[in-house]
Image (tube, rainbow over all chains, first blue to last red; front, side, top):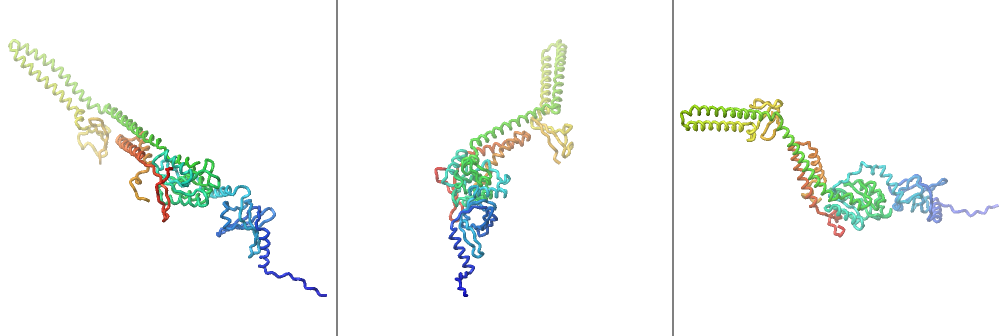
Length: 426
Length: 83
């Protein structure tokens, strides 16, 4: 019997087969949603990310091409549970089918929230938030940079507060968009420009008014975080309302809850500064008064010291002796005068007695003058005329000749008023 | 950088204020000699005068920095009633 030749299926080339398979797959799964866990993701320099999506039972190769990846804010991490949207096709060359991802969302949290957590974790592990990296904010800045939008409320709030607190600041505003895709690179560039062109800026405020997580997103981007970290000028972040924390806040040297608060932090209160200066001035005066008072007190104490009183005492004693002699002399003279008068009485002439009295009075006057001279010669009076007494220390011996001292001997010099110690120059 | 005006070469206000504080503390400690105290006192008085003058003298200045065609930052006064 003959076997009718069966209708042989056409022989396909491998390429033809794969092309047919591809056609079937693409037609059947042009737009599919799939939920699974990311495994072993690998991003190539091209920007494409290859990974495996799997569940407990099965797995499928997946690709996130660069174009779609740019819309994904978070990083595809191993173990991350996601919902991905895409289509199924084949990689002809290898005859493998794969899932081409167009969108991907984390299953557990929002994409932005996840991106935020991921970047925060990464930068933190790099030490970008470390306290020891924080530059001190100058307490008295004169030049303040402001990186924000010229359109927003933030710039007005900042300027109003700065002006109220301390009229007299030099404010440099760098206008940047603060939301949208161009915001983050613009903010990063502005910070770099300010550092390069105006490095004398004392502090820079970076921020914007409040908004949704999406609105504030630029301040959660790596470019901004890196620019803040790289800034030589201390940075104060001020993004949104009290509760919004951004990556910028973690990297900044200081975080202010709002733009107005940042301005408050940065501007010294002029009234307070004025008060500080005048209080310093009056403290200066009273401290100086105290120092002078103490010096005066010390001088008075020294003047009372026995060493200084000694020459005075010698003079006193001499003066006393003069007085004593004078007082003894006077009666003696008077006695003699009386006696002479008595003796001369018989001789009669009053003239002689008068003459004798005049002679004696003359003597008395000379004696008084002598006493005065003695007083004038007192060392203290001499000192008053600009002379000085030098005493050799420690024995306080009066120096009469330069031969009495040797180099490095300490001497004390007593002046008309006060005294000081000195050392003989070698 | 637009040159060095006299203002820019001046010691920062904050530094001067710190020096004044320091002078006051030194003088209040009362450990210096009379001569030195007087010198300190005089420098302190001069500093406080200079600081007060500077405090009242400074003018509020708000500039907007924008890039020119060459990509260089240029400062222009803010033309806005916000300033």
